[in-house]
Length: 401
Image (tube, rainbow, N blue to C red; front, side, top):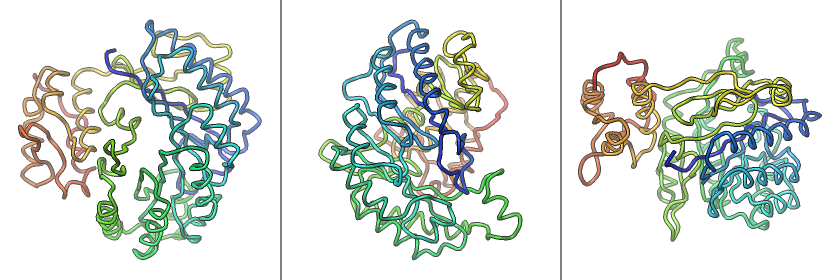
């Protein structure tokens, strides 16, 4: 692999499973944290050795779940394992997701000392009604304190996650939330429209008539208002749901997530984690106990399929071409480079997808941009209809290109 690799570690522990969450998370399993972290270190050590070369690593991301529930010493030990078995670059972006009510000044200081240099806080809302509906275990004061403590601990790269488009959420309430968040001056924002997924409390409430369905038109208004407000405040809108603040060194995008959107390699480690390395997509066992047991007693397959792998699917060229469009078109300015696509797959975008591109241009959802008009990207109208665009590149019958 010529490109630097990213590492994703899944931390599945939570104090409480939120009403909208369909991630691989579990409450009430805190007694397994120490065993789990030991198993996670073993998987990281195995991956680093089994790769056959010392993988150059430029981003590490701990997501969940609630990684900030893990003692700082355990997290520091995990980073030490990464440094031992991977070539972690000196300027690597190392992110920890955190819930505002689970951090202290001491814990954040210890994390910064361990090498974490980016914190992503799940703020979600600044309104008590919204937070109650989302079943979040914090309030706005917790967010303000967490940001202050992060700054005092030396973190100068901070993301805030927010959710909009909640049932019965008026535009004014969303505007107040975003204004409060902007007052905290984070370097990065991730804004997500609420999606009601199967198996979540939200879905059950909706089916029983206890909450109304989200208003898609109102959610679009919220999105467009946020776009205007953040642009005016000096944030670059570089991906459908993500904004980075401009500074003297450029825009502070999330380098780890760029790895996904550019369809570049990453190892997924931990229970339920997904990875994509050497043209193989891997998925680990979801259960915490099953993951620990397999890491303790199982036998690894060939890299990148580790001891706890549930599936390892080789991605053929045609599937990879489609996936490249689906993820790359999320990048609003960068889009998908025809030159990069041709270098990677040996065919141009229009050779691979002539009808799809022509149709989406006709309905003003895609456009060619760049100085040489070789960047395919969403139009401004396409920002709101991204899923419609991406669906055009799913499960296509293979053509000879």
